[in-house]
Image (tube, rainbow, N blue to C red):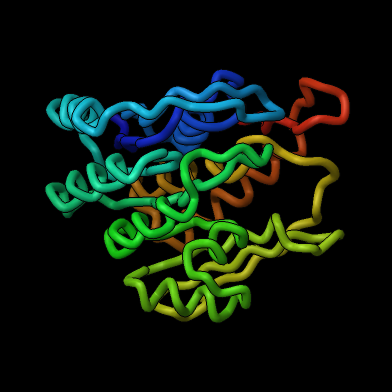
Amino acid sequence: MRPVVLCFSGLDPSGGAGLQADIEAIGQSGAHAAIACTALTIQNSQQVFGFEAVSSPLLLAQANAVVSDLPIRCVKSGMLGTTDNIAALAQFLREHPDYLYVLDPVLVANSGGALGDQQTLVRAFAELIPLATVLTPNTVELRALTGEQDLEKATRKLFAMGAKAVLVKGGHEDTPDHIRNALYINMEMVSESTYPRLPGEYHGSGCSLASFVAGRLAQGDHLKQAVQHAEIWLSGALKNAETPVPGGQKIPKRF
């Protein structure tokens, strides 16, 4: 069987982000996606209206059922929603130290909707950071996690908090003509990529990138190689994105 990525993420009914984005991106990477659903959200491609998190015992029961008969190589997490679910995932990862782990520290949807109490989640994420193979924050999440506004200081602080590698995504920065991403391993920048900024906003781009990275790691890519593959793939998915509502957020075309 293909190597498996176990995703801890929420359900987005629009299919633009969340678990469907994970499944599609991981499938396109060549791996197989398994799911431990963290929450049911009320949202469309433009707005988050609310969510209801699953209980942490139910979350762990889902994950443990999958582990019992699928060849898990990597874990990817997106929306976790509650501190109990963050603690449950940390417990699960400590019980499975051989799994690679991609931490996409989702705090707010691209549409601006809250996916949990941000200050509480930020404090709880400190338990997950040292367990991650790589974190994939955008610059808004990076500043929120560290309390630092300067991106260089914020990245250094993540490493001080126990991070091993960080992929900083620059899509939220005020760079009208380009987007810059940077991959750091052990506090050293090992690669930097710049892409033309496409017009409009995109729903699910961040989770798609993190999931593709997880899929490539599950198949044995080194981290730098996995990130390069993911960025090239996502660039094509965004160029061909579909717009469900005129003038609204676009959904990446992951197939």
